[in-house]
Every structure is written in C-alpha cells, then in structure tokens.
Amino acid sequence: MIDFELDEAHGIVRVWPSRPLSADDFGDLAMVVDAEIESGGDLAGIIIEATRFPGWDRFGAMVTHLRFVHDHHRHVKKIAIVTASHLGDVAEKLVSHFISAEVRHFPAGQAEQAADWILGRQ
Image (cartoon, rainbow, N blue to C red; front, top):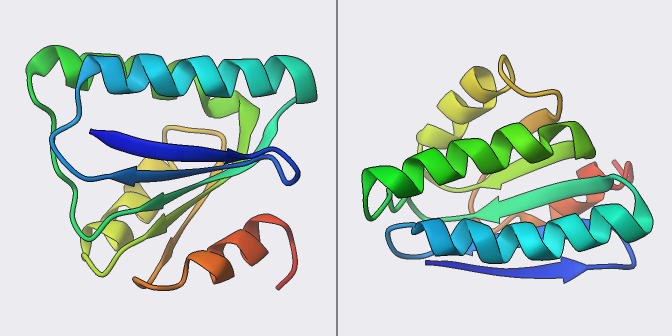
C-alpha cells in the first residue's frame, strides 16, 4: 500500500509505502502524477519515506512499478529516499544508472532536508 500526497505549490510528491505494493497503488499514483505533469510540467521531485522497503504483493505489482518508473522518470528532476535502511544507499547508487532523475539518500527523519534539496535550498 502506498500513501501519497502532492504538494502542488512546489511540484513534490511525497510517498509513504507501508505494506506490500500492489498494481493498483501505482495506478492511483500515476493518475495524480500524470495530472500534475500535464497541468504544471515536470515534477521538482519525489520524496519516498520508508522505514523499510515493503516489497510487492505479487509479481504483476513489480512489473507495474517498473512501468511507472519507466513512464515517469523523465518528468521528475530529483528523487529523495528517506530511510534508516542501508537500501537507501544502494538505491541511490543503483537506481541513478537507470533513470534521468538525480537520486539521493537521506537518513530517517530528514524529509524536510530532502524537500530543501529538491527545491535547491541547500
């Protein structure tokens, strides 16, 4: 399950994955992100806050997740991963090779610092 909110004023989507991700999660997220891209252009960034990566509820959800990334990564300038997990470091280095967005890992509790980075305030 993904909870998310769009900060329209700054073009930032904040995402909180809490349970294994489903294909429907990415459909819901895509509707919001697509509407914002169509009305306001590219997103400044996405902030993903998770204590741990919850995985996917089935293989189809993983495929939908990868399709979402493929379809949207050119419209997102920066991605901040806010987590205490060492997977944040791995994701920062690995994911940046496959997408055009700049990716950075922030320690848990630093979502506002992540937003400042996305907005160029630091």
